[in-house]
Length: 299
Ligand SMILES: C[S@@+](CC[C@H](N)C(=O)[O-])C[C@H]1O[C@@H](n2cnc3c(N)ncnc32)[C@H](O)[C@@H]1O
Image 1: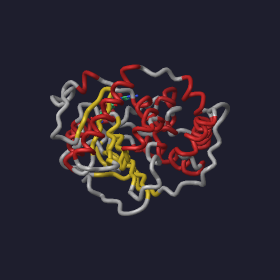
Image 2: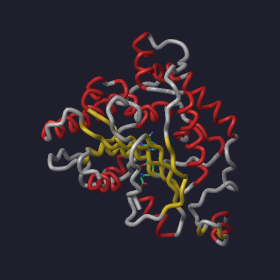
Image 3: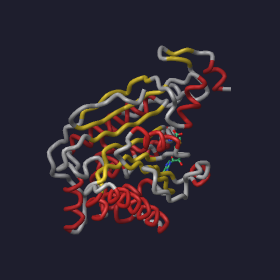
Image 4: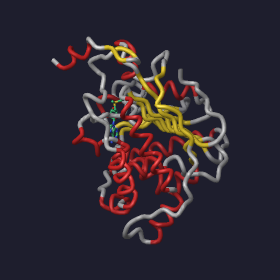
């Protein structure tokens, strides 16, 4: 079997385990092709925005999360509430740990899997004494609602966005299922530029056991930065009728990045991380941030 063969080999960065994905298993995507794909997704965003059907339960989940954030903000006399998104939170283990770490923020854990969320006793509870709320929703819809909801934009400031062990889709034919090569990628990137007039650090944190995934994520994020995609520009475009292709007019964004870096973590932030740590699978992190102090506070 392929995995048992792999288990016998060692890489410079640690054991190769049954979970390892490397260049042999999935060769890197051609960089020029990936750049073209990101450009195409930006240009074609108007079509994706209009054509993608929106499920009612995603709208309801979004409103539930927003009500939670606003209630929490009002109880603390905040005009703008700082929010950490934990996209693809699985059982929500990371959301709770992030809630402890960022006590001045509200953490919203989002996942489409009822089976995973239901493993968390807090799922489905509307508790007032917590800064963490888990919802079942599809991420592409959720990101879209964040961008187009004036109420969200009036009350919320996304300061961190975590993508912890996104589904890797390690087959070439599944490239477009990976977040960085998906038509929704511009939406994901825009969640980080929604309130640039507010002087606050922004950060995206992506972790994976597949270094190549993060290398390609970084490349795609760089292309987005070069294009200068910006949420205000997008909202103006949509308000103006949103027809045709989108060519952002904002100047290139100055994002800083670190990684992908091999990291050691204790305790694990997520269930997948725990599984990887247990068997010695190396894990990597990519961070993309704007201004100020980058705290390396996860290890
Ligand atoms: C590999 S698991 C990682 C879960 C968790 N972050 C962890 O590290 O244990 C990926 C998670 O992303 C969720 N997911 C993937 N695509 C999604 C989408 N489009 N909308 C909502 N959730 C999604 C899956 O349901 C799954 O729980």
